[in-house]
Length: 94
Image (cartoon, rainbow, N blue to C red; front, side, top):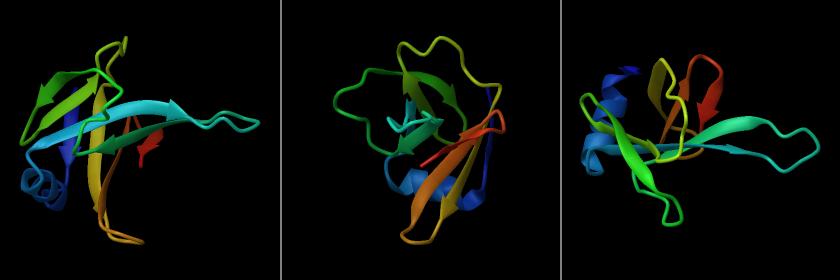
């Protein structure tokens, strides 16, 4: 998996322990839209495995069948400072 991360994202993740956890999810509305979520802390109810080690470690669900070919990571400032990313050009991690 190729990781494309801004310098600000690398610094943000490093300041919080150097790990980024990513996991797919979907909304339960009429038209479920798959999306990705991420954070610098693991979700307590999920099992993760390391999948990449770039300037920071990336952890994905242990049961994820296929990894994306590319993961982009950015920092957003509004409405609050947070890390966001998307993989394979289609799904944002919020």
